[in-house]
Image (cartoon, rainbow over all chains, first blue to last red; front, side):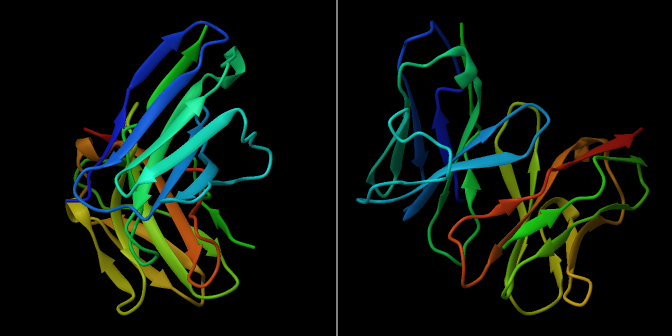
Length: 115
Length: 114
């Protein structure tokens, strides 16, 4: 149980393109979803936390207009990287949680490469 | 403030030998503690958690961890390592009454040598 599906797994696109990444909880209702960014050989950096039906809470230094997060239902959250540039290239990982006492379950990540 | 320290970037162990991956934490209140494993180009897989109760927690794939409040540690252990255990391991903590999100350590790369 507790499967989180993240799609696409890899994106390669030109600078200036907007890219949408989907994160779905397949067998549970995710009241909270998290978006992380991971740089090579580094830990996960939390970008934002979203609760279903509410605006996302962004971490300090993360541009909310650059990284648009929508958590429209209890099973789906999306991250849109707007007008992506090469410095946005990274591994983006989502996670979902049913409630505060439960562990977060992670998607398989999306490797974004901006040319 | 919450933080996690994984003092070893790399741990090497021979197949069949016991393994330990170290983790110490700092929270202002009572901790929720987690271990995750990451394989190349994949997300994190949940291994085990400590919320309350027995200090020795058993998780997936034969892994276990012991919560030690006095030493603020939550080391991951396995009695007999497999080559397939080779991966990147992350310890994470959350203050039970505090922040909504997890704080991750920097990860420890475990290599099991055949």
